[in-house]
Image (cartoon, rainbow, N blue to C red; front, side, top):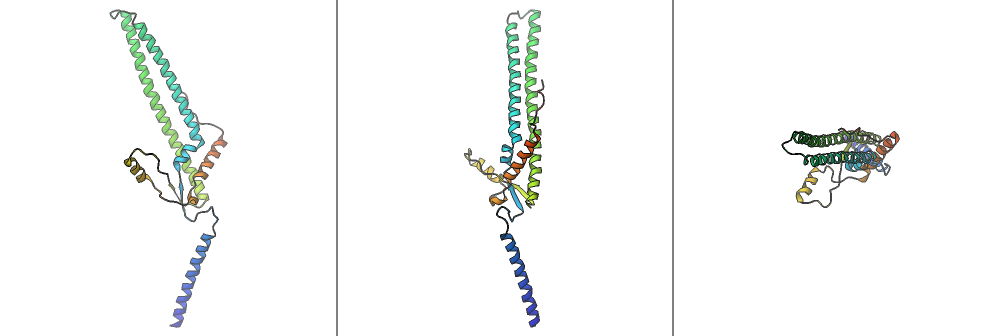
Length: 211
């Protein structure tokens, strides 16, 4: 009976020693290394401050200016044709032909506007997907290097929301309420993305403007 008690006591001491060693290892970790296997990232910040995104915004602004310049030119042509039409009698053959030409210009303008808008939306979708994939790949690299197994998206609540419903919607969408700052890999991911982007030395291009 005494031997059984001694075995139980010895086993208990071994468990205590093991737990003590684990706790000591966790406390001995470097200040910048989190004990958790879960990390967080502010993906909105990464999107907004990624240098490729900033360059793409400039490209999309340029494309919008090009579209507007094309529309302005078409408006001038339409206005010119409309003034020329006023010089002809409605019953004349020239009037009907010029009226059809004017209608064709107006239809072409509307078709161009719709096509340009659809093209910009589609390009924006393509580049958003491409950028998100890049962020995910770089996030995975950083997480693996630092020993994180899961990375969750986190975001701050927006200020000056219009009403309580908008606030409730943001609260519902939040995935993380609290995290230790050591779990945040946002800056590391953003820094690596920008480094890799700068090393490529080539800005994104949207391609020629369709007409």
